[in-house]
Length: 308
Image (tube, rainbow, N blue to C red; front, side, top):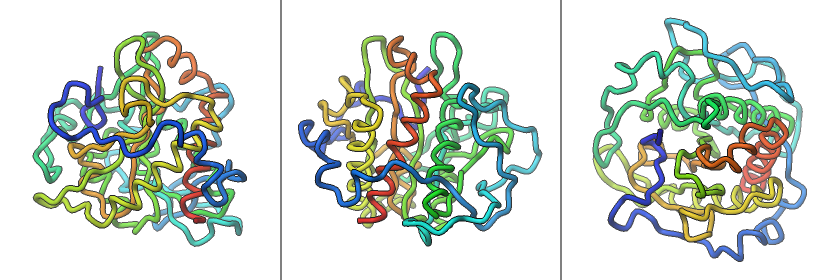
């Protein structure tokens, strides 16, 4: 199943798809971005709320189902003291796409929310591999790995959800969490649900939007730089190629129909780490070793952007 908040734009009409970076340059991003070559680690840290930090993900098991707490938190942060590092003083919000519990709360996630350019469902269940490995489990696992990496470099990291709420949050709340934290960077973690044969990753950038409660004018340029650096590091660390079905082989796509981007007031991108419906990509996405590489690649891009 494809998920509305990051559906491939192949069936959309109009100018929403706007590739912004040459394919040949992607592999060389790390050669030109300051600090990129040495980036590969750092992960999430403490925030204004005190949430219990989950155990570090094991090399073999993805996260389990969320709790059934009746009072969802607005953002989950680590409580452990952060080390001093190159990202000390920086705040990163990591947004694990969807929630394993969404499937049990269809009424709630089908409620409509304002995304500036229109209205959409609060959230969706996300996609899954043919074998049933859910996107929501993948996104939590990668996000937790990414948090650990960023915290090791001193960053304060907030997760929009950490398996600590029964469903959601809605896409508008996800944006608000990043805005409230005045995050230096926000990255929403996803995996795509496209057709077999469609392979590779792509990073989704915010389009210029000024409608309703959405105004991305201040974040378009910095978000693009964040996205380019993540894409370059993702290629370098994972060895994955840019998408062969979105972004004209650039690994980058610009969209104006995603509430998580439209409503953000701080630099933000989505990354679709691969296509869960393609067997070859699914083999990567279900590998704990590859998920660690994905987290390293994303962390490297974030670190390169924040240390520029």
